Image 1 (spheres, rainbow, N blue to C red):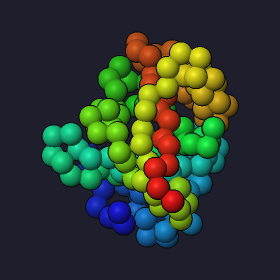
Image 2 (spheres, helix red, strand yellow; image 1 turned 135 degrees about the horizontal axis):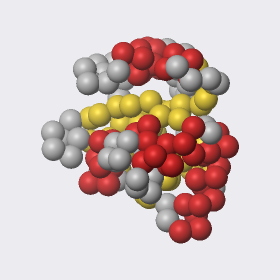
Image 3 (cartoon, rainbow, N blue to C red; image 1 turned 90 degrees about the horizontal axis):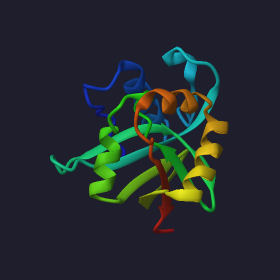
Image 4 (cartoon, helix red, strand yellow; image 1 turned 45 degrees about the vertical axis):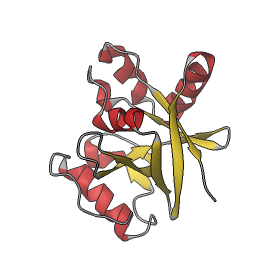
Length: 153
């Protein structure tokens, strides 16, 4: 899925991050400098490709991730907005996704963590990216924690 056509609805800094990640095959873009979006710190990112639940078209987005139990973990925070991000709605509709982590590209299956697993993985992800705690405080919804499990070599 080496497509650099970012949705025009995405902010410019996300479009740039996506372009750099894809064009460098993950070498430039895997570690994201949050200063580009007004934050602080450098964080690991992956590229998540979902299938649009209405369009059927691939949708690709860079997201901060953590690793746990042999899989990758992402947070459907949408920056603390009250609605779930579109990418999360897409993967709920179709859980098979494509991932790129650095230069490693593979298929994965997504699921939403619940209960004790969610709490444990939430704490892990807040340790990776502390602003998630603030996002949860203002979201007015339980922010989903998504586990991505590899389904092929």
